[in-house]
Amino acid sequence: MPVMNYLTTCIFDHGALKQLPRTLKGLGGAKPFIVTDPGIKAAGLLDRVTSALEGEPAGLFAETEPNPTERQAREATEAYTASGADSLIALGGGSSMDMAKIVGLMATHEGPYEQYGALKGGARKIGKIPPLVAIPTTAGTGSEVSVGAVAILDNGTKETIISPNLIPATAICDPDLTLGLPAGMTAATGMDAVTHCIESVLSPNANPPAEGIGYDGVHRAVGNGWLKRAVADGSDAEARWNMMMASYEGALAFVKGLGGVHALSHAAGRLHEKRLHHGTLNAIFLPHLLRENKGAADEKYARLAFAMGLPAGADLAEAIERLNEEIGIPARLSDIGLEAGDGPAIVDYALKDLAHISNARPLERGDYERIYETAL
Image 1 (cartoon, rainbow, N blue to C red):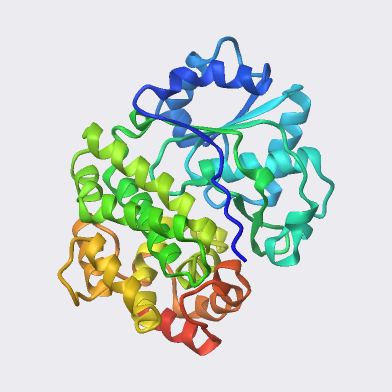
Image 2: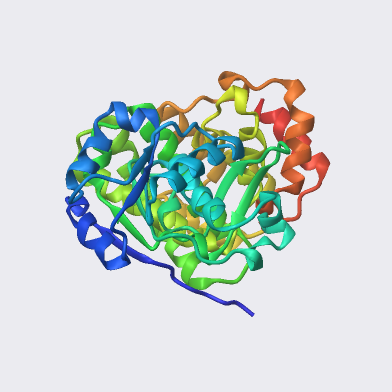
């Protein structure tokens, strides 16, 4: 029996950042701790957030790495606790928002943290975390309104931790913060949003509202061409607004489930030393999974083609490959540093990933092995 819940407060528009002081006050947050990354700090976005605050933050952790780790989350949690903060601000892309969620978890829950993994039934063990305001600076992950956080744990697993208590209390989505984002990052994060929408639609789990949102998100990003416009012109405010909305919609949609693209991307992303971007991995894997899943949901494929502005009977995989090429996404896994020797471990972890369970059709080891080899 489906149980559907949408989801949290989102303040969305150009200039939304101005609402930060009022938002914190409404949540009882007088001493916020900011979690962000070095790139956000260097780009001046951190200064814009601190300027918007009425007073200084209690503390700051600005060293978040791509694909955050349990080790680094402990460092950030120690800084949070020492600061005397009473709330959190996540500023950045998915890594910073995931890091802030894990900090909130660590500050209020005992380890070991692998016990909170979704496949271990960890959601029932997760209580309230400090009030969290999420401010995205990319349009892709949707973590500002999602129930999940992903981190590489000390045991080497890239663990998905899911709980309604990890949803930020408020998301402030200000497209102005994405103006000037480089074309490569715009493309990669945009394809993350597109993949969220497509995999959510194709998931066999029942949630018609989520599925409808997924169709709208892919129509907005691909069918209406806002992704290509945002990549072509980083100052296009209308394109940035629509891509941030597509990203937001992708996260609203993926409460329905994801699929094999994300299982493989999570598994590859745990290779921390390679520093692979999640959205780029999704973009490369997506056409291969669309071919693998063909025939499992014919009506949904037809509706996705319509949403993407394609003619009836169009090949979705080929359309995504063309889109990837047009926006500068690498064609193959080997182009971003993956090798044949990485395959066995990636397949092992994909089979253990939460997203594997909700793929459009059941996948086995041999399926993932073939997909990886083809994508390489």
